[in-house]
Length: 258
Image 1 (cartoon, rainbow, N blue to C red):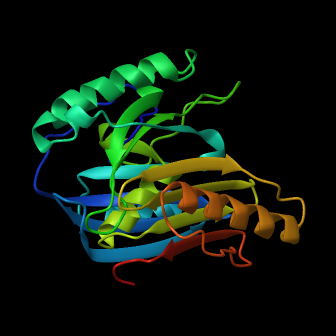
Image 2 (tube, one colour):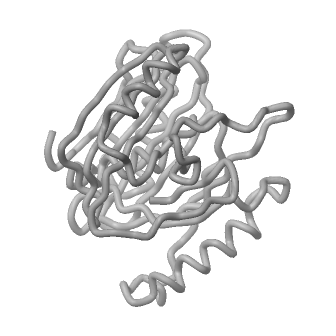
């Protein structure tokens, strides 16, 4: 999964299965997911918890009670990230060229993303959120540091286990863990941001957008138009879409399994 780090990271050795924890701030709540992840992103032994955003002690205690995690994934809000889709070179699409493709995307991220973003806050990678046989998408991701923003405080006892990933990438990974979905949407009405991924037979897209959230009607209309446009661009039927009435909502369309 494509990830960025709040500091230059030290990565643990890769393994075929690992215990992961994911932390996502949603409005005034913090969601914690603990799971076992296999080598292709499938999840098992899930545990989910929710805490008030100010309850850092409760979150730390929940992390401490769980089996030791091999990685702690912290999700960056879409309103703080830059996401660009780029074509996958046809000669790099084969599995044997993955290392070359990763290197090429890293160079593209350095060349095409804002120059003021430090190297450890930008990256490139591949997502495959769609159903079996659907296309992949190549993403360039940046997490610019805002003026006066202090470094994030670590949650894990071992700071080197923490990585950060944008909502749009986490969304694609969740769709993948469900054996694919034609479209996945995370809409945050409070910030006016939307992350959407759509995958058709020949093209996949990922977008991070800021939309009109001035009124509930404007928000629903803007989200519906953005999702329809993204689906059409991926070669899918631009089906009607409207987020639910919660401040933050997650929607999977055409998922392989619930």
